[in-house]
Image 1: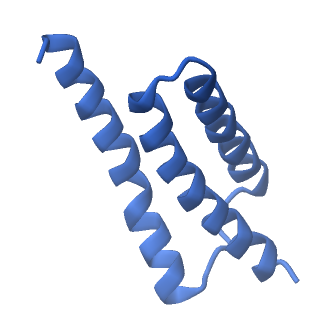
Image 2: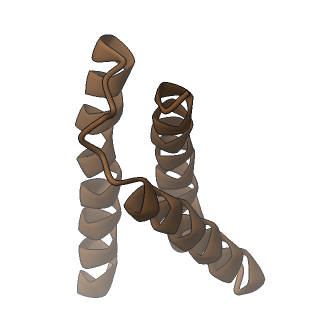
Length: 85
C-alpha cells in the first residue's frame, strides 16, 4: 500500500470516528437543543454530495466513509428536527 493510501484511510477513520460520540450522546440523552440546525442540514447535504462524487468516479474510499457519516448526520439531523416539535 502506498503512503497516500494510509493518509486516506486515516482521514476516513477520523471522519467517521468524529461523528460516533456525538450520535451516541444524542441517542442516550435525546438532547439536541445546543446543535445548530443549519449546520447539520449542510453536513447532510455535503456528505450526500461526497457519496455522489465517489459513486460517479467509482471511488470506494470516498463512498464508504462518507456514506457512514451521511447516515450518522441524518440520524443527528432527524433527532434535531424531532426535538424541535
